[in-house]
Length: 139
Picture 1 (spheres, rainbow, N blue to C red):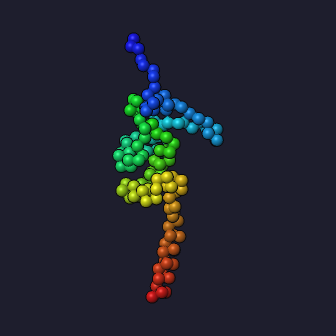
Picture 2 (tube, rainbow, N blue to C red; picture 1 turned 135 degrees about the vertical axis):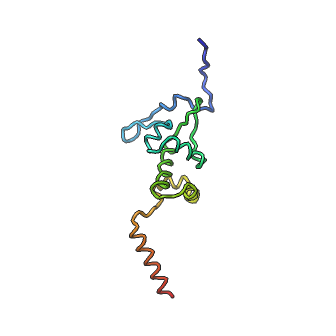
Picture 3 (cartoon, rainbow, N blue to C red; picture 1 turned 60 degrees about the vertical axis):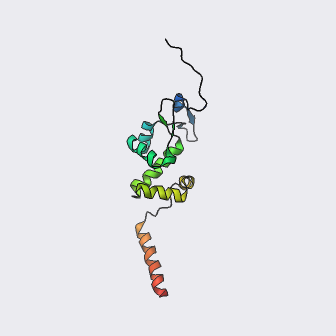
């Protein structure tokens, strides 16, 4: 039997860190790290799509354990949900979503959560119509 070196590398994330959990305010267990399969189940985004998004949104790339498994934080999951909302809910292209997040700032986008989208299209069209009427009145 080979003798394993049990010293931890200070630059690597321990493999068992994915199992580390802390109790949050709601009484549910909040994990410190999530693996790609868990993130896929939480967000409803397939693992291959998550890997692709990592290449498109470079700042989204998670840490990797010594065994090269991706270890996502809660912040990564929030960002994935935000990107999913932009791409699938608001029908942005990847380039458009990247630009929107860059213009707004990733941190600020996460804080606002909803990116201030208008979901009531009738109100939006009414507002545009009113603005056009004001412009016509000025002419």
